[in-house]
Length: 346
Image 1 (cartoon, rainbow, N blue to C red):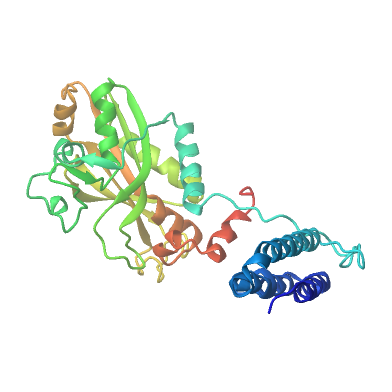
Image 2: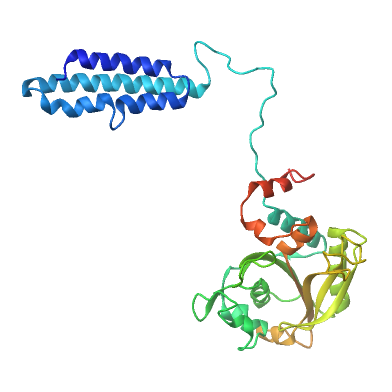
């Protein structure tokens, strides 16, 4: 039978156990033991129905008062432990030890690399422009001279939302949108995320970053393209880096080229990184196709231009010797923190 004596003993033992707690685990155990859902004080409150009806209001009030006292004692002890101080030990720990710095994060390595690349092209007179990740088929393919039967227009290669809307596969649509609203001269770069229906592996990802550049004006030639890309490569990878252009095909440029950089590991001698060739592919480029100018309303006989595009993830992998593109999206701090502590990146 519940009576005042039993409740008083519960109060005394609860307050004593809370007072003796030296860490949060012991304090939490005391709370659960007495005022938790199945605690001793809580159980007495549920057992009121077994005592005579005329005594229930008095006993109920008594139990609630005890529960409030124990709860207040718990909160006070919790604050005391949180402050790291106690009456017995006002200065815990060794005050002669060096203090700990607060944890501080940093920009993701891909954002760092993007920032560095943008600064180089800013210095060459390029400006920044951006566009939507969710794009129209017209801007992503049709206005860029992709034929209707091109493999990349298949759902096996591209994330289609419906027949006319998709996740952009390149940042080239940004260039088309810009040219529609601006007349030459045009000198822009367009970084951002792109999406392709790829099975992730060390060198492929369904989501990655790309940086594309465009220069349109009168009398722009391949010489200007080579000059700008050579300046970028030598500035970013080192003055000893060399560049070569190999014929290639892209629907939106003609002529087109794959751009290779001399291997920064073996200096062109041939190693496992470059596949014994001495060269590493870093981007695609070429002169803007006349059909693209037709879509945006530029005079094809008056203006020429070049475009280029590079994968930011690939540039970062080459720059820092990263062997798996999936590291960029795994959010593993052991991987990411090493770039925050590099000189100039704090």
